[in-house]
Length: 178
Length: 433
Image 1 (cartoon, rainbow over the protein chains, first blue to last red):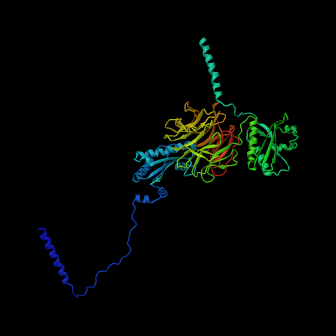
Image 2 (image 1 turned 180 degrees about the horizontal axis):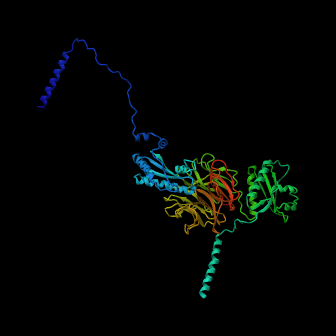
Image 3 (image 1 turned 120 degrees about the horizontal axis):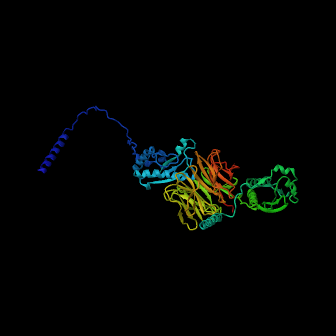
């Protein structure tokens, strides 16, 4: 039964073919009524839209750190516990780190000048350690994070006003591996 | 009645024993004699053999350096130069002692300079006691012209030693400076002269400290991307990592040269560690969850002074070198650090923060009294004693940037000795070799 249908179909197709051949003859061609569009002959390839991850991978470590994906956190005078208003910053940093699973970071603890060199070395490390513990509590693996203390040797501001001191009591997040 | 008698005998024995044991711990050297009158010394211009071609500058440098050293000593008091003009000029072969007695000189130094054919300078000096008209002692020092200042320092130290004091003028300071752009370690004479850079790491180098033989230093460097503790031989250039996990700093070499105490966070918290330099064995001395830092040896190597936050705020404590018998010595104020034990063992200089200012204080272990040495002049930090315990070097921001200053044990005679870049964390050699 199936074979019969196929034979009928082929026969029908052949008939239509011969029929179309018959129509060929000396007829005048009709004037083209539509306008053909002439377009650029260079292949048009758009700059691909990079995902955030691809964009990040393209940058050097230095550029990535300048871009500021990870935000600093600040501390109270003589203290190393994470302040409530700094927790959202750490949450954002943790989210970013979870999204970029290969990134390894160095957290630098810094102090203002109103502590001694010796005590500030320990205090700076305590601050970095607090930030480390908080990130770990948010699911960041501790082996992705290193900490270092600079005490008061690397202030960002030289002033002796409270704003300068505030800016200097910080933990900075530096990307060291992508 | 019998019981009372026995009791009083026992008390008597103890009362006699305890000062005896304390005494046996101390060195023979008595240390500074506060309140002792200074010895008046006359230092007339040096004679020099007319034939030798001596640069005027060298004569002046030798004379001024020796003058300055003796003036600085707090042991000698120089008879003012103007007074020498009232009497006949000194003739080394025929000294008129009555003249020198008339201008209140007790001691007279007669110096002679000559240049050897090889271009070396030779400085000979003789010291006389004016009243008895007697020669006491004399020395000859020779060296290249570049060592003019060193020759003067050696002569001044001979004066100190003869009068029963410790030498200090050839001693050096070690410190951190960014004068060449990066924080590196430098050494210089006690008076700020003859400075020399000794690290070229191009990373932050800090917390330098002398070994007891003055040939090695301990310091912290970030050259391996972590604050590691190194020992570094400044004559051979050989460097060795002593501790490389966590933050490692504020090291101090024991007065016997065999052990090093330092702060490390390798255990997860800032604790004090004791490292035996011969066996390499290490012992942790503090155990808690708070900050312990800034260890410094007592001169008899039996005790260690350090900073601890165990009471809530950083305070100064003393422990035995085994880590036992911990007792607190600062009670007033809320922030103390950077203790430095004086070479005779009776005083501890430290930094105290009051209303965000740092000032230097000295705690006297014998009298249990505290004196304040700096006031209203920027932040004053990291005091370190001179080998004779009469002077301190420290850093201060009184002029804006960190610079190094000297002052006497009572806070007087403050003098700036560095001027370029920022200079901090000074340490004076503990002993002159």
